[in-house]
Structure formats: C-alpha cells, structure tokens
Image (tube, rainbow, N blue to C red):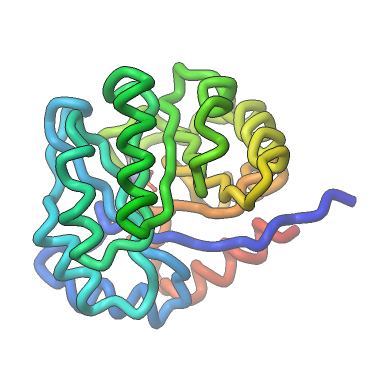
Length: 225
Ligand code: DX5
Ligand code: ZN
C-alpha cells in the first residue's frame, strides 16, 4: 500500500469574507486548519489584484498557525523583507516570473530572511522545471488551475505532474512539501494525495462549506483513504 504523507490543510483566504477578516482567520483556526494560504496578485503576473502586505501582516498578527504567502507578482524580490517582518512562515514564487537567475536569487533571499522557500508551476510547465531549484526549496506548488482566480475547476491532467514532483521532492537531501492549489475539495483531494501531494490549498470548498470543521475533517479523511 502507498504510504501517505503527513496531510496538512491550508485554507486560501481569497475565498473568505473580507468584511470580517479577523473572524474568518479565527474561524479557520478553530475549524482545524494547519496553515493560512495568502494569495498576492499584482494584476500584471496574473489578470487579477487581490490584497497586499499590510493585510498579510494583519492576518499574521491574529493567526495562531503559520502564514504561507503565494506571490503571483512580477517583482517578488522587492517584498521578501516586508513579508519576513510581517511574520510570514513561507513564501512561494512562480518559476516564470523572471529569468532563472532572478528566480534563484529570490529563493535565496527568502531563505536568508529565515522563511521557507517555495516554487510554483503554472499548468503549462513540466515538473522538470523544478529540478534545478530542489537544493534550495522547501515546498513545490503544483497549480491545478491557471493562477489568478478562486473557484475554478480542478485540472485532473495535472495529476501525473504531481507524481513526478513527489519523486523530485523525495530525491532531495531535505524534506520538500508538495502543495496543490486550485479546485481542491472533497471530490479532488484524494487523487492529489494519491499522486503524492501533502499540503492542500482549499479556498471555495473550505470557506463556503456549511460547517468548516466538518469540512476539514472530511478533507483529511478523503486524503488519507
Ligand atoms: C488561485 C489561487 C488559489 C485560490 C484557490 O490563483 O492561487 O489559492 O484561492 O481557490 P479555490 O480553492 O477556490 O480553487
Ligand atoms: Zn494560491
């Protein structure tokens, strides 16, 4: 039988009620979330704008669980220090926001600032793209939708890439989390866990669930099946 990795659930705040941000953060912690996933979009790297670093700082100040920042922006290098100061635990950038040299320098800056470094792939990039960065990454994020919006349909054709990414992660000399993001919920979490993902970003299916604690329990059960 396949050994499942330690499952962690990361609600994506993009789907929360922004009028009641503090309550939403506390409700997610009370429901059993492990990590907060905060999506930063600049309207350039992706065709949408979400929220900025002051909001993340506010979230981190009321959160008892780590905050994971997913940067869908063109110039992440410039904001690493501000994220570290805000108390962010991990920062993920995309493989194609700039040249490989700038991508590596940004990952190095994240590590030097004392945070976990993540690298994400848009659907069109193959798992091989991650190999040159495995030495420095703590997390690989496989997008299972085109980044930019919550509430999209899960792309099942990303599953083989998740499995390849797990292999790359496991051949590194340090632990690397395999995170999935986009369209994850009750119906899709098991296939991602079977493919080797261990951290699950869940926006709509978490925040719109009638009972969030029950939803987290179900996600964990499905992932572990
Ligand atoms: C999309 C974001 C996701 C998004 C996921 O670009 O990276 O984190 O919030 O939302 P759902 O779970 O609704 O697909
Ligand atoms: Zn995200």
